[in-house]
Every structure is written in structure tokens, then in C-alpha cells.
Image (cartoon, rainbow, N blue to C red; front, side):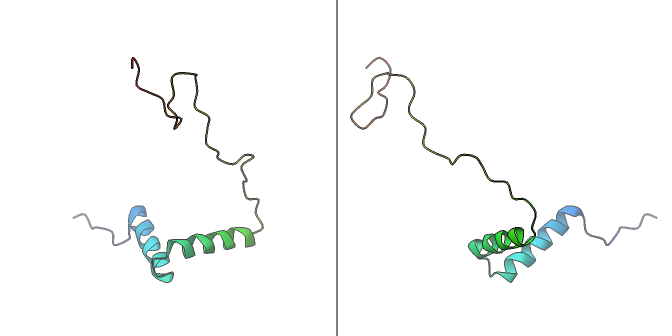
Length: 76
């Protein structure tokens, strides 16, 4: 007879830990993120920083654009 293990699967463990963290901060995702940031900085390990920030890209091409800067449909 095959006995089922009572140990949780890795997925069950992840879900349990997520619930524990969420409960600890009352479900406040901003508080969870702030705590994670604080712990990462306190660890003394290097933290990756992007070289550039995300910016809105310019529209490409010089196709017909309306006064609001949006492209007009082709053939009109």
C-alpha cells in the first residue's frame, strides 16, 4: 500500500507563506512592498538599479496625425 505524504508540496508551501505574509500586514500590499524593500536594503547585498527610467516613447513615422497626436486611420 502506498502511503500519502503529509508534507506539503512546494506550491502549497508558497501559498501558505504568502498567506502568512499577507496576514502579517493585513493584506496591505504597499506595506508588504515597503517591508521587502527595507529588508533588502538592510541585507547589505547589492541591489540592481536600472540605468534609465521608463519614459514614454515618441510615435514613429511621419504619417498623418491629428491635432491630438494620434495617427489617423490609413486611407482617410
